[in-house]
Length: 154
Image (cartoon, rainbow, N blue to C red):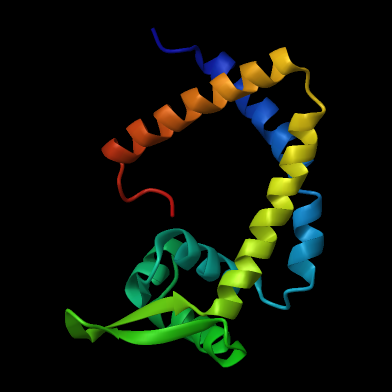
């Protein structure tokens, strides 16, 4: 039997609070990157999905192709994204992170991961076991949802 709406909402409230605990280091790291939020989103989409078509970036961000093109142009000028032809279709442009772009995103990822490590280390062994089990359940649910809604998310 699925959980009640109230239980789901209560869990979402906890998730919001956990997210607030996990993020304090991330904004400080992001501030030194000198990229806009839109540009950071583009970099994250590419980082998580690999080489990405311009049209896919626009779709995922909910913006027009010319809008995403301007942001990608700036990222290319900064040397953190490259454009290349798709070997299977020369009309298609793929965006890929450069080595510097990958380093930038990895720095953010590691910052958030270190904050999470500190929080997990503050738990008792039995508490950590519960968190581990809960994360396993969330991973399974995410995989299930992705199968039924493949176009959602990054």
